Length: 101
Image (cartoon, rainbow, N blue to C red; front, top):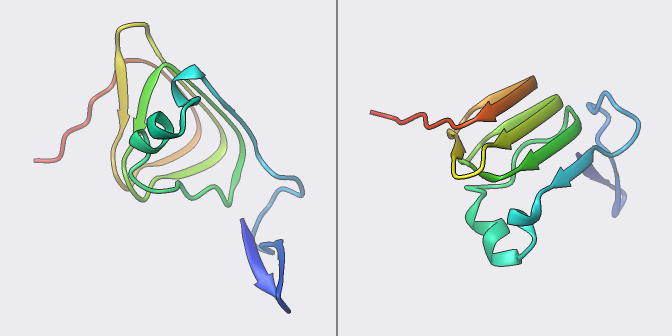
């Protein structure tokens, strides 16, 4: 989302939105340890406008989030976003497990 220019952070010129993305995370992400457990790596948010995540949700590595993405796991359910997934303007609810084989 940012690049270095003459020793200063500037917005990446490839970003299509002028502002930073709005990110709303549920209470499951409140503690640093819980937050870190839920991300395989930092998602690519260069093209993200809005992200809302609620419930038991985890992200694999190398995930890209674009546009508006809303992910809500049902109580007692878990949503696993697989590594390398690209989510663009998506609403995901319920439970989801995608396994590599």
